Image (cartoon, rainbow, N blue to C red; front, top):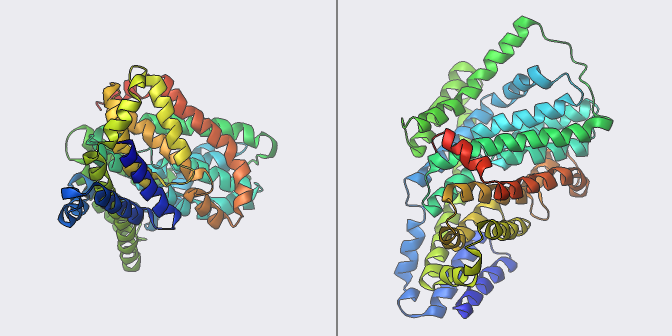
Length: 431
C-alpha cells in the first residue's frame, strides 16, 4: 500500500518536474500506476472510459455556462458600471478608491466566479485609476490582486462547482454557504486597507454628483447586480438547478449587454465564446485527467491507506482540519486551485467523513485555503495578472500583498476554530 502511494506520488511529481502540464502529468501518473499494478487495471479501455466519464456530468455543465456569462457581462459594459456604483458610497472618503476596489471585486465576483478573469477586468481599470489619483502603483496592484480572490468564494464559484462534482455535494448548498465567508473576507480586506492607507491614503477630489446623476449611476449599476440575485433566489427557491442557473445567467447577460447597455457587439460575442470555450476546456480536461488518477487511487486503496495512517486524528476534527488546510495552503504555492481540488478531494474525503465533518462546510474552507495560492509566489496566477495590468514587476507586488495574505490565512483558521461562522448562516439560507 505504502509502495503504491510512493509510486503514485513519484509519477505525479516527476511528471510535473519534467514540465508537463498538470492534466498530462495526471494521465501519465495514472497510466504508470496502472502498469505498476498490472492485471485488469492496465486495460487501456478502462483508462479511456474513466477519462471520458470525468466530464460526463450534468452538474459539470454549469461551469461553461457561468464562464460564458462572466465573459459576456465583462465585455458588455458591466465593469465600469460596478466601479461607478461603488464610487457613490465610498469614493470620497480617505483611501476611497481602495474601498471602491474592494467592493467592486465583491460585486464582480458574484458574476464571474474566476479570480484571474476578475483581476484582468478590474485591474486594467482600477490600477491606472488609483495610480493617477496619487496612490502607490505597487500597493494598488497588491490591493486589486488580494481583493479579487473573493471571486472563487462568492457564488457562482468555479472551484466550488469542481469540488461539488468531485465530492458529490450539492452545488446549491456550496453556493449558499459561500455568501457569508465572502462578506467576512470583504470586511477583513476593508479593515486591512484602513490601516494600510492611513499614511498615504488619498481623498478623492472628484466633484460631488448631483442627485439626478447619482440616481442614474445607481439604476445603471442595478442591472448588473440583479444577476446574482436572480441566480441565488432561483436556487434557494428550487426554481432551477445549478446547471439551469448557468443558462439563465447567459441569457440574462446577453439581454443586458445587447438591449440594456448596448455595448455587446457581434465581435465581442464571438470573442466571448472563444474565451469561455478555452477556459472551460482547460478545466474539463483537468477533471477528466483527475478522474483517471482518482480511479487508480481508489483501486489501489490509497485514500484508505491515508485514512488509516491519520485515523488517530478523526476523533479531533479541529486538529485534523488544521493539518489538512495547512497542507493545502502549502500546496497552493506551487499548484493551481482546480488541480489541487481535483487531486486532493478523493484523498481527503474519507478522512473528513470518518471525522464526521460536514462536506459542505469542509468544501467552503477547502476552497478558501486553495485560493490563497492565487496570491502566493512562485505560481500566483492572480499576482501575475495584476503585475501585467499594473505594469509592475513581481518583486514589487509581493510586499504589499503580505498583510492581506496573512489576514486571509487567519480567516481560514478562524473558520476551523468556529465552524458556526459558516454553518449558522448556511442554515439561515436553507443550505
